[in-house]
Amino acid sequence: MGGQACVFYGGAEFSRDTDLALLADADNLERLERALADLQAERIAVPALSLETLERGHAVHFRCRHADVAGMRIDVMSRMRGVDPFETLWDRRTSAELPDGLRLELLSLPDLVAAKKTQRDKDWPMIRRLVEAHHFEHRERATIEAVRFWLRELRTPSLLVETAARWPEAAGDAMRERPLLGNAVAGDLQALETSILEEERLEKAVDREYWAPRRLELERWRRERS
Image 1 (cartoon, rainbow, N blue to C red):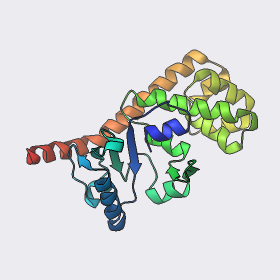
Image 2 (cartoon, helix red, strand yellow; image 1 turned 180 degrees about the vertical axis):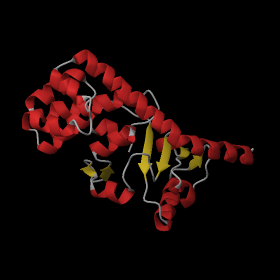
Image 3 (cartoon, rainbow, N blue to C red; image 1 turned 135 degrees about the vertical axis):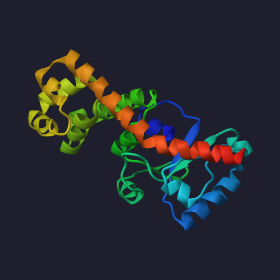
């Protein structure tokens, strides 16, 4: 659900970390603990790994010591702001098979984009690249679902103007959810750029508000740990 998925979708070239979305139940937690033991993974920060921690929306962080993956960081979450419950994510997942037969399950691209809408500045260029890559790959054979995704998530003014002009009916429908598309329909690139930046600012503010009580919990756990 992180950098490795971004590599798969063409939004990044490399990632040293692995971020996992986990179904939080007792059996799954036991499987995860066995896998972490095989990787000689040590927890590197608060909070501790527990069902309660995951259900409260926290990430749990590990560093691998096994020679094959030495230094690799693993972050585990179960609930994310603005993202559907795990069962829904699983139903929409993207499956891929490696040459050796290993099967990978990744967040769908729309769910990955939703998960990336954080207060961190580095996530927003990644969102832009992910949606651009999808647009360039599929625009010649676009489905209506893809068009709606682009209108909802594209952050490149010129591509939004192009998409709105090519599919005006879909743009009109999407405008109710994303008013800045009015600027795309009008072809006003400058106003569109300003609106996209304001959209990002508001989303970051929502994310900071979401994490405020959780940060207080983390600080309390750090004090108790020390």
